[in-house]
Length: 190
Image (cartoon, rainbow, N blue to C red; front, side, top):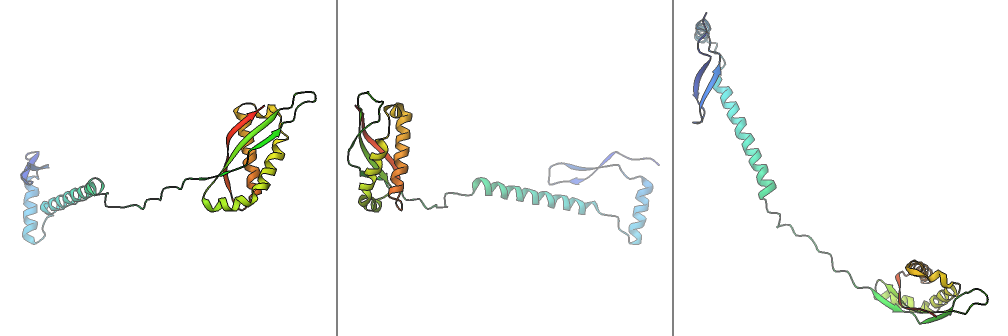
């Protein structure tokens, strides 16, 4: 038995080129296939496999094309997001000017601390809640600041600690309301 050519041309696939199948059947196998076809048993047709492969390739192309369109060409500008309203500017409450003497060592010159303070609150209704408690706020501030030494106010770290301590004290005094920050307008140590 002799084998024929290694490849045989079955047909053209969409004009791209010939479809080659490896291994030509021998003459005896061709004869047996022809006898089987005459008996009614049909050998598996390679055209069905070809149609299945072509259909699978078309489906893959369609799916990849649809995915490409979905991710790259679909317009995202149609979606509208609700914009948050712009934040309201804070409101400031003036605290009366304070002048307190600082604790010093015995025999040292007495030093004084003059402070102008402003309280930062969230909105206008809180101002009306804080104003009746202002005498209590000034009392808490003065009693705390009278215990300070001049060395407690040295540098920016000392002023930061003073600001934090005054903020904590004012928030306890106006407790249902909340003060965001204590701001210094003026600080003088004499």
